[in-house]
Length: 102
Image (cartoon, rainbow, N blue to C red; front, side):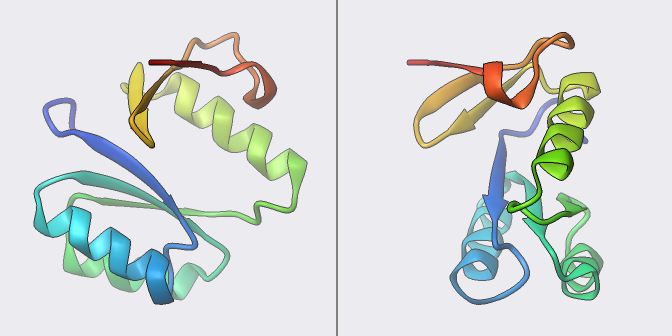
């Protein structure tokens, strides 16, 4: 993940509106963390853009959500923009304690 790019997280990234949102952000120069269950579809988007970070998981699975939160907390991203709010990520945070500011 690149520190200089603005980063967004898109769920349902593998198809339909989610994929279209990913492609739109990518075309505007954003780094996109795309979440979906379809690994092959995520990898196809990754093949189109180095700024796409695929993350295969099921949002109905709490353990997978917590795992994603841990990976995110350990990444170089300390702040992410989500719907015009800032998520500040600390390594000790769990998904349920992420704080929205803004």
